[in-house]
Image 1: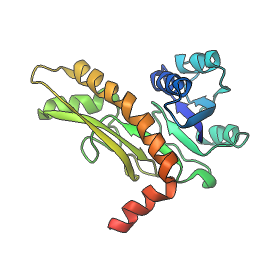
Image 2: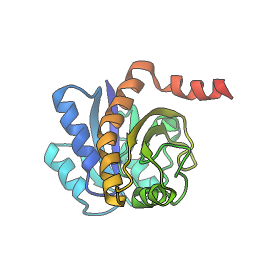
Image 3: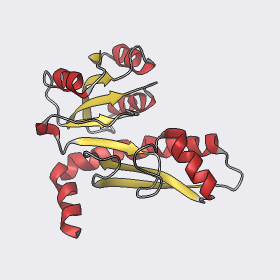
Image 4: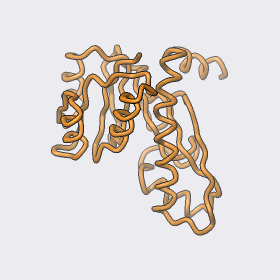
Length: 195
């Protein structure tokens, strides 16, 4: 069972998903603390409602100060829209979800509707999501899990976003469960071993 910190910047839809799955026993994690870099967002209200310690911190230093008071195995970026620099002891333990199939439509500036607009503009017939470990660069850490979704010619950007988010709700918990089963080092070594 992984002890989780959840970082968010908005409504907390991914936090909802985590909480629901923890309650059902299908997510091998326990949320220890929730932190937002945006003040007064709905995600913090939800965290408090669920009974999780919830904090607003505008920068990495503040977040890391909060996290040092909790026993944390992994940090989950759940709609967290800034580059996060963890403390050294968690440097390989930050997990992010990206709303595309990395290495496509990723990197600095590719988030949310920017990703889905790029997918639509290119005429892609599939999209999906990638759960990966985060490092000091956007979307470049080792991949844990990817899931694909078919797109239709008529899909607009909002439809693409909805399809991808639906698959994200499956992928992120599944990826956390895989990390719980295999351990963090497996994923870092898997990528290093293939180079």
